[in-house]
Length: 414
Image (cartoon, helix red, strand yellow):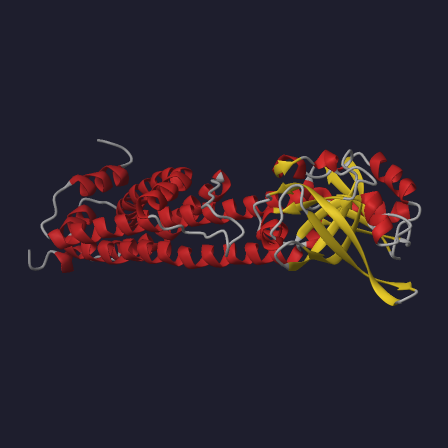
């Protein structure tokens, strides 16, 4: 005879036609519900991973992975700090910068923005802003040329293009013979960039660092930006450099600078995982009702098996195997469906947008204007394991109830 006996009988029950078709319907409904829940969970978690990765790459493409700044207004000994930072084995690039909030006046309107002074030759070591230029070149920001590079939305707000003039008002007051006057300087637009994030496209202007030092009357840069070989080492590298540089300097990693933002994403991902896990749990719990009805339907079979010498533990194994087979079919279908949907979701979303003409994520509202998705097999493993455990737990009570069946009581009216 086929061994193990429990698996043989469980497979026979799966393949056998039901006298009560409602039991088959409940079993199929449980399997389909489990598959849909797993598909939804894998797809949602993949979308959350995609948003997290996309936002992280866009933010870190415009800001540094770690920053060294002075406790005072400027870093007078910034070259020493730069040399110490570059000696760290995890630091791949370092570049000084100046950053101040200012008021800009263009042809059509005025707007506030962050003005960042950089060294064009050093900036590619820490950011990829040069690859985001849609007009002009970052190398045009030569010292003394008083050129400026604007974000795309900021340039549109000011009504300027490459070659036009922009007046930058520094947050300083100059004393002149006619009285106190705001410190200002006229710049020529030499380039426009598009970072893909509203925060930078509408609120960031870039000039040469030496021009920024003259405009803001600074003796040195505001700080030094670092690029690391492993962005998750940022806090560790920051702590090491802080000890080497001393108390006159402040060193922060990107996780500290944007901690609340990424914590919010992680919290949202966790909440979505819990909510959708309840869907999987409810679908797996439907196995209880289908197995309870099956046990009731198979009372005579159970009694005959017990009479032939099959132990209560073996009877329990038969129905646990049957419930797990139903659950495993739903899990396999759900995992395959979820993986396929997660991989092809961006293309599917683009197709729906092209057909309907409706954009899911508007550029004027959201940081990202497409639907990202990043499948992680570790997440698929966790979801599969969780669904398997739910299915296993759902089979315990009905199988235990079947094992408690008394043969004489079950066969009394047969």
